[in-house]
Image (cartoon, rainbow, N blue to C red; front, top):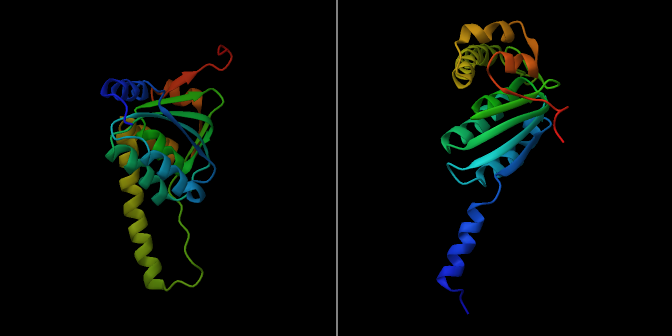
Length: 184
């Protein structure tokens, strides 16, 4: 027997009042890409979710993929750095509408790094280097744009590479500072 229309509507309304989905982005992005993508894709387009981040980074391509999912699906993400958010993990954080850090959060900004297979031909290596240089410049510009700042403000953190505390990120106006001592 089917449920009355009013009961179905109230159950749907109750579902809309649920807290936003919480997603943990923990560890190397490359190792956990499939799981994180699946969880982001389970958030309805235009909806809210919370992304807890403790990651040393990973592949730049994984980072841009996760960032693309957040932006293309217009997800209203609150990113909370619970520990480390370094290297490629910074891009998904920058894509968040709201960014939160603690004084103990740490973020490593640095130029992109790349690796190649051992047995690569010189011509392939030269093409990869050209491509990677262009990608690095484009990604730096994208990162600054997502943070809503001029690239010139971000470059001293990226080159030659700098650890930035959560407090510094908040003082730069790029995140909100969560005071762990005042939380109950």
